[in-house]
Length: 294
Image 1: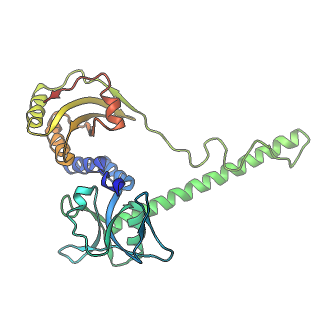
Image 2: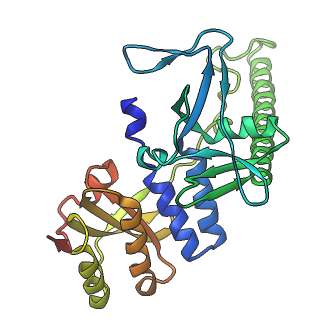
């Protein structure tokens, strides 16, 4: 239980608000990437009731049936609710026998695609009310299947080429049919499964509009923020700015307002936000002076 109470999904909420301000294809894609990475909270009921272990995790008996409630919009479309954090989930009134459990995009996709009456799932239905429609989920699953199929075909091709090269080398050495003992199927250089990594680097912002800093400081004075830092960030070839905040309370509205203040002064820039306690935040503020301090 303690684990799910700590869920925040700050990056998802930030990506959503940035997409709302400037709905470019890049920001839409970034938002969906965050949705697919996120862990959500969902109300669920079990038959029979599970036991809770000493580690706080539910222990399901074989054959346990799990049911998820639905919410309907004004058009009668039915959606499964998903909450980004414990506070948002408290707006859902748990009925007798219901518990909050951790779920993922893959969990929702599996349930929705099995139920022809399900229209999708809705993130924070009592706040942001972000609907992830069935057709979007279907398209993503189709893309995933096509990607996996392509990678498998590439791996099989490389494996066949590797075997052919090993056989040719064996024939040249008078040992036809004896494969290289050090070669393993699927481990050719660049085999499927290798992932592209994106490097994140920081750089000091040499010149920041004073009017922007003034507006940001004026806003931060009204918030439970102790310190605020601003650091330049490069994610691959994407240039952006990262806010790092030492604060208390709900960060969603705080990040939302900072993005709104920043937009006129940073056109075309990617905006990010995190806390001083996150790994990213700790690295970003190393040796950096805050631009705001209460």
